[in-house]
Amino acid sequence: MNTQKITQDISWVGVDDHQTELFEGLWPLDNGISYNAYVINDEKVAVIDAVKDFECETYLEKIKSIIGDKPVDYLVVNHMEPDHSSGISELRAAYPGVTIVANQKALPMLKNFYGIEEGIQIVADGDTLELGAHCLSFHMTPMVHWPESMVTYDQKDKVLFSMDVFGSFKATDGVIFDDENIVESFVDEIYRYFACIIGKVRLPAAKALKKLGGLEIKTICPSHGLVWRENPGYILDLYTRMANAETENGVVIAYGSMYGNTKHSAELLAEYLKDDGVEIVKLYDVAQTDLSYILADIWRYKGLLLGAPAYYGQLFPKMAGVLYKLAGNKLLNHALGIFTDYSWSGGAEKPFAAFAAEAGGVHVGQTVSVQGWADAEDEAALKELAQSVANVLKLERA
Image 1 (tube, rainbow, N blue to C red):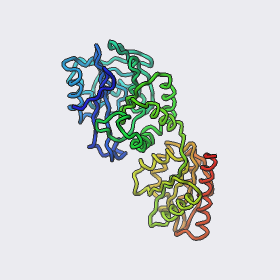
Image 2: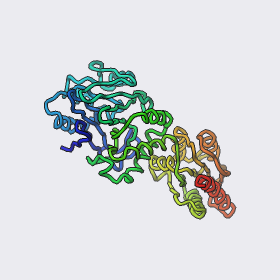
Image 3: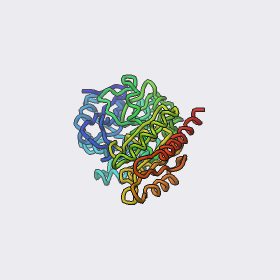
Image 4: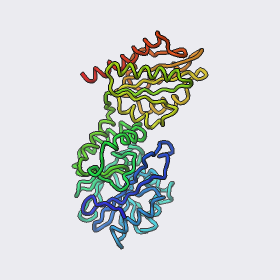
């Protein structure tokens, strides 16, 4: 039975998921995902969060292996999203005397999702719960990323149970600690998780991170991904930079192409950028690469070139899907360039222009519209567009 001691009284009782293909029905889980839950074995026993219901048997066995015949006194529900909460009913069936600790905004969800209306202790921002040697405090983090979201802090061991904040995709397979892993192997999945799940609520996330900065934190225990016991400052700094829309030097070129013409323009742009000294250039075909991977690199890198052909007088549909998600995330601190392709009447320019006006990034250079295959004049325009984006990156480095 793989349980892990985090401190003398606090243990990990999470599970790993390699069955679910799409998180939220949208985002591929090529490397799986972990659902982290924790037990505080004190005079009173508190379980922090449930897990997805298909792994409840393992979760309950782990809890029992730690507490033996003791009852579970409290289940703290930091977040009601079903990847965490769908195991609540099974936990309550195993421990019928358990009190669910949640905030006011979780109550209608408990009722609607699981028919639970009794045995609930409501907590507000700053409230505490005594377990014996341990005292838990609760801190509301609304809209990070649901309205009922909160985090829990153990005052004795300085452990932050951070809910989805500081989380990532990628299963840990029971090797849960940052010092037991190559942290860099999680960075791409941290960015992908943030861009897809937290990005739209970047501002509430930044506010929550500032609020949590007032706590003395020795260990960060999120609901997904690694437990940060050796270097919690690493993930705190990375999440803060992402929430503040800080970017690295590099360019993402995301394009759609029906017959290879727009792809050719995209490849020319990549070549011109590298010739101009841009070391990191990520080239993505939006019809071939899942949106989540594109979003992650767009969030990470400052430069963004978007290109697609007209499609019956409108924008190529796969690119329209990219713009929909990007419009929600915004493009603060980005340098944006646009290129299009058409055969007879065009039509992609207008939706691109509307996006550029609303997205929040800096639109650099003139939109390049190519008719069919790029000729020498088009190549010169594409080169100028690449240089405009590269110049912004150079200013950033200066």
